[in-house]
Image (tube, rainbow, N blue to C red; front, top):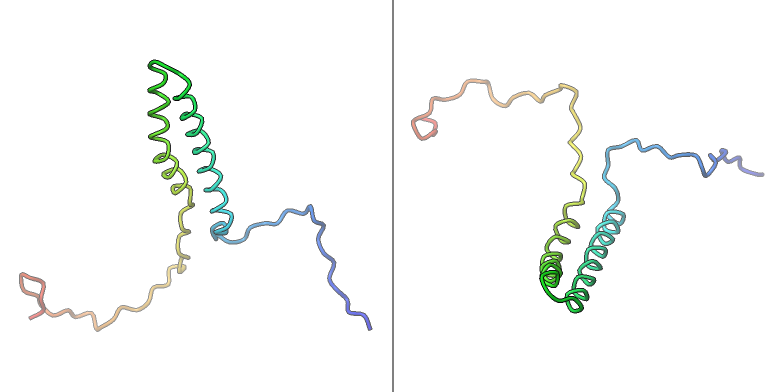
Length: 112
């Protein structure tokens, strides 16, 4: 006896995202690693050019080689997308605790 399987959608069919979930940690880490690697490659180019050139341009490359690691870390760490907002409760609020009568307080906010 052969079991009937539902037909699959063609592989080129777009998959729609139905949640507000973040991208996976692996995807995010890969993107940050690429950004950091590009920045460090530019730094290595600055170091080589600082060794080859002379004059004011040499100082520009030295400053670039010194500042780029800090900038690269900021760019890589700032790329994480923000956490999604918590789901709305559709206007349903839990009942308040207590009877609604609050005891009087003194100047320090301590109940009497």
